[in-house]
Image (cartoon, rainbow, N blue to C red; front, top):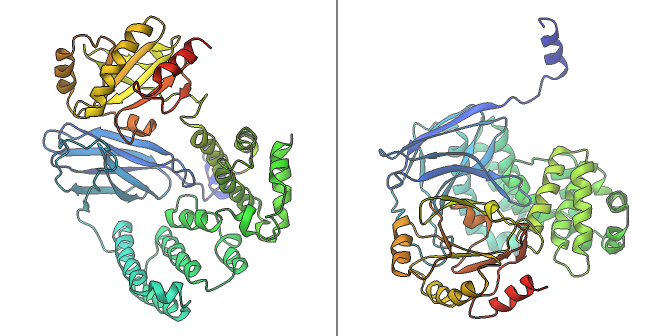
Length: 463
């Protein structure tokens, strides 16, 4: 072993090693609530994943711990509220979150009523990544606001050059690669706005001759914008290709990759494949292309791609494009019922499910619930009825049900499982979802009881 380890280090000296990153802090007003570290699984789809979670204790304190081998953008999340934080491997962050009344009754659109968490880093040094990014963003936003017309209308390159020089002088000795790239691609977006150079020089400067920065938010923001509709509209050599025919063919993936070589700017296979993924995402809802064909192509890329990050994006795209659509798996959950027993969606497998999201303060929810009662009486022996209360307090749901003794179907309380509202994209209440006996989405959103729900139930139960 003494001779083997140096051999490994010699031939693989740059393999990243995961390090523990810890976040401690206080969040007054959030005592007893769940706090999460959430990030994007990838920066093309924006699908989110939870990296760590904890409960804010009675003194408003919390500790979050995660292992990472890269620098990335994350969110601290409490209820519907979140604040951004850039995290580096092996760092300890001591944060304070400004007091907030988390128990204030939300309106019918909870996510639209959410607030940004005001996060302050304690004992922060001037060269800390979050401090640097905040300082640069302040300069950047002021520059764009003051000079937008000169850049967009007059294509005043001199102003942009002056700003670039000023930023070099303001941040002269910064060694943090993430920040250097963040600034580079943030300024690239202004270059595109001002049209200071053609498409070809832009691709060469920022993509062909540079590594793909999958975890840098500004790189990927610029990438998504720059390559939007690139193969079908922007690229002259590519825009007249028969993509529908290639997608429908048995060798769609290799055929598409070969065809895209006609654009010499996409010679690098990794970049070419990523551009293809970006454009397949946009083509999915275009009636010119069959969604099943795009799904099949994405599945092939997820299986056969030589690039790990692209495989992850292809897998995420399949989830993103098909989620909550007919035939996709309904997001699972385990929640507490009125008797404080745990009920999971998987427990109901074997029966169709009518799932509803509601709150006691939503008047339209209460009206629809009254109309749901006769449907339950008629169909409850053939399917499950489940209503999930998003009220802040369990007792509010229980008090309501004690008044409505005839509402005897399954009622569950959301509790602090706010992520379930994201999983089902609940933007307003009430929302109904029809699920088949195998746990697959039949209709999302389902019709309301007052506007066609019974017809949908009949069609499901009597095909």
